Length: 568
Ligand code: GLC
Image 1 (cartoon, rainbow, N blue to C red):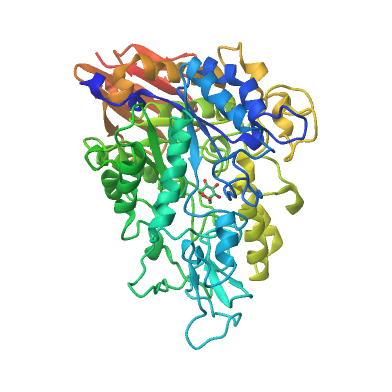
Image 2 (image 1 turned 30 degrees about the vertical axis):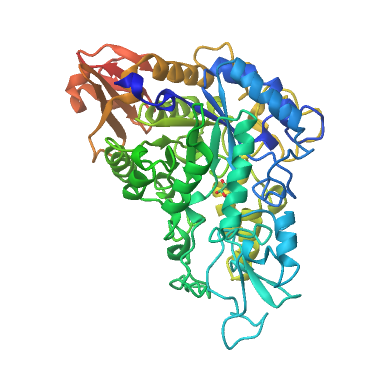
């Protein structure tokens, strides 16, 4: 039966954020030449898939998540020839390529939007969401926006176009206008573009905020206000665009139009902020043919208060309850994706681990073991396999990310102190994930011969790929072992999951079972030694499969120790 399951149930995906991965031409910005030059790193690691964050032409307002041409490569990153070369080189090494599909919105510089903006009678006017001011108000009046929704990147989701007196919708930055998926021409254009990439040999798509493409709109075109946000004149519009009324129809249609009947072994993963496990079951039910797996956000929201900038410590019980629910909810139908880090999250070793010199390596490998032993497809974000940590940002000038900068402006003008906003940015800014990959100990970490677009983390002199490559005790070597384990052991890929010790505050433990084969996984997510055999007597007679630390006393789980044992 295992053999009938899709290939990606045994796969590990590696995410490349090209800007920060490797620069081959000395302009300080990573590029496709750099990716091609570092493919050995990926094959040494043993990953099966490379997910490439956007490399399309873009004004780079959101580092490529604002696309102005879906069927080309930005010269900043290289050429279409190099993309073809990458497909070929990956395939030759037995790996596959996942492209980023960003079609909830385009750039405001995409010819479609330029045409749409040209006036109310434009044939593409209806490709985007244009609306007059709120009834009874004049364009530009405070509060005249068509709805009260707050953008994900601060401020209203509507920007006024003075020429026509109408507003356009952007759930993200004003340079990222939302496409109108109600219009069948938009959907057909997206499908055609996707087929064009598959024809070039790519193996699937990671679909950016794909659960936002359907908006709850009345037959006469009205959109609804959301509940007011505390302390703000704006409201939460998510009820109108997260998992909107036609989302399943749009995804099923996309699957039919793009993938159905095509030869090949594809992978689709839908990024879905706010998705619940019940909804994920529906989205990933193979019988419905929508997407193979989703990125959910529950676990990376557990340390948020009223917003991501309001940071709270993670409570272990909450993490167990959340992961446990996802493992159970997708055990018979659908599939999980597993991640700690990506280009939108601060570094997990700083956030959930312990990046003090004493425990950085141990906590990085412990968190990795925990995640990679769950059921689902693990995603490794560039640098995570090296134990890369948050950056020591000093001042506001050190940040580049549009989300961080917009937040600063809005929070400070709303009366928050600059210091407290900076403190939150240091912990949560996406720039933490975007500093250059640390290849070696040289001044620019082997990333570029020029000046890197974001500074390299000063800790690269110690934490880098060259230092770890041949060190069996390194974070890198541990990732290699975890990835190999998933390939070798069907129980790791496919076994049933059962959570143990749900109320323990520091030990995260579970079993994985496939037929007669059972593994027990125990991870100590803290600095205090834990009495393993007392907590989990079954661990006593169980031989070690994989651990992250030398074992001194088998009965004790040391600080940040992770152990995988085979139950007799
Ligand atoms: C997704 C991307 C993020 C981007 C946003 C808007 O969340 O991962 O980087 O800013 O969508 O495209």
